Amino acid sequence: MAGNYLTEMTDFTSDKRLAKENKIKQLLGKISLPWTITIGYLILILLLPITALITKSITLGFEEFWRIATSEVAMSAYEVSFLTALIAALINGVMGTLIAWVLVRYEFPGKKVIDAAVDLPFALPTSVAGLVLATVYSDKGWIGQLFAPLGIKIAFTRLGVFVAMLFISLPFIVRTLQPVLQEMESEVEEAALSLGASEWQTFWRVILPPLLPPILTGVALGFSRAVGEYGSVVIVSSGIPFQDLIAPVLVFQRLEQYDVAGATVIGTVLLIVSLVLLLLINLLQQWGRRYAVK
Amino acid sequence: MSIIINQVSKKFGDFQALDRINLEIKEGGLVALLGPSGSGKSTLLRAIAGLETPDTGSIIINGKDATHLDVAQRNIGFVFQHYALFKHLTIRQNIAFGLEIRKHPPKRIKQKVDELLALIQLEGLGNRYPAQLSGGQRQRVALARALAVEPGVLLLDEPFGALDAKVRKELRAWLRRLHDEVHVTSVFVTHDQEEAMEVADEIVVMNQGHIEQVGTPAEIYDHPATAFVMSFVGEVNILPGVAGLFCNLPTSQSHVYVRPHELDLLHHEHESSTPATVKRIIHLGREIQAELALPDDFVVFANLSREKFAELNLEAGQQVFVKPQNAKSFADLHRAVLS
Image (cartoon, rainbow over all chains, first blue to last red; front, side):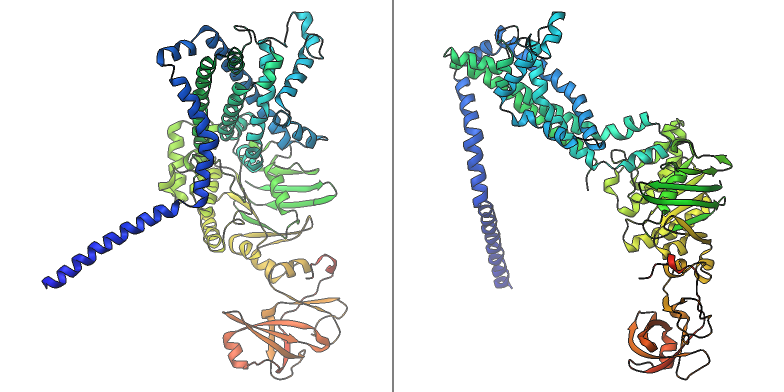
């Protein structure tokens, strides 16, 4: 009896050891070639430069960091950047939704061309976009000359920054919404109508609610793109502090003055805001999928 | 509520979906619009609902001309093939939708939704989203949502079309029972003749924008008015009316229609029988089907009960005599589908 018991015991421990070995093997198995390449690439391309930026700005010490980060010029540049980008993204939230709706629901000649043109801000080099906008919106440009007599200057003012941000953020909302609208069945609208809803009620209660998460996602994407925009804004604005100077241009100005520390601090602030935004976008997308659980 | 359809036509481009349709649907009936795809049955249903506007003619619902009324004003309930539930709303909110639009007090709405959840046997699932239910459950929710507003007419467009065979059968029986409880005038579209026979009190057989026949399932099956109805509803053998084949029929008619189970097989020649050779025996489970070659190589199928089959002791290659108990011919062959 006792002997049997003992062998059982040893069997048991060897089983345990085997299980442990298996677990280690499993873990090692997960570190496959694709995994290694993925992590290596991400570290090299994404994490390393970001870490370098943060380390550089940390070496300044908190007080110095805070002083530069909250200096008057920087604060005004954030305001121009974030506020203008927010307004541009919100306006495109409405206009982009309308454009996506028309592109999905309506048939008209030239639809394919317009659909392709929506991607123009993606495809165009940002400096070219800036050049185009500066030409059209300057005092003698096609649109600028209409506003000049009213005393409204667009190019080389904050309005110019705003126009550039409108231009650059539009495709994000349209392209986020289009697939969602295509998937939407028209039967759902007919169902609402058959239940006695007016067209207005159908829009507010049936069509819009499932569109809100993708609209917000598109707005957030467009906003973060507008905040990060540099190339077109630097051309279409004058870059004067407290007027139309945006944060990314401020970073570049600091670098031109060999103020690397100042540039890194403002860069870090922008980085943190971008990360928060990305997190927000992810949460929005999760929220949008909450009722799509299979 | 009764529905009267008066000379209704509808064209989509060059396609005549409905051609001067006249139809009366009695109050409290459960009517099937049966036909192949493109026969106009869905268009007719959508015209009754107000989801399509007829080019000509009028639609009278409960004695009132509804031809130019909006969907919302017709007091109908509509059930779609793919459920068309509101994905962002829970089951309870889906069912309550029509009541909320009508601004019923919240207490009444809650009570009504509870009643309907019990009726569709989904009491515990009210707070789920449509994506979390099976197809059959979703279609029941769609039905409850349509019934919540107590419509005068319930219209169902291929309501079981997207479901698998077993669920479809269960839901058919359930719809029949439900109608016997609720008694709302109901019209459903189907291309499945078995479904129409099982569920409906009355069947409207449609083909190419016309109504071929209106009748009870028994009338449609036993006394088909046209060649199309005979060939679309139930299995049928179609033979050229050559003199000598089934000679009890007038030979002037071009084709003869016989149901496979209305063919008698005999060992000996009989008055009005035709000699045939057994080509193949097919076991269908409940019945046995014999493939028979008639003179001039015409092929017919005869369905036999197992008992009859055992009694005849049939084998492939055997010589037998075929005698129709019931054969029909129609003057309107040009509209029949011969396939």
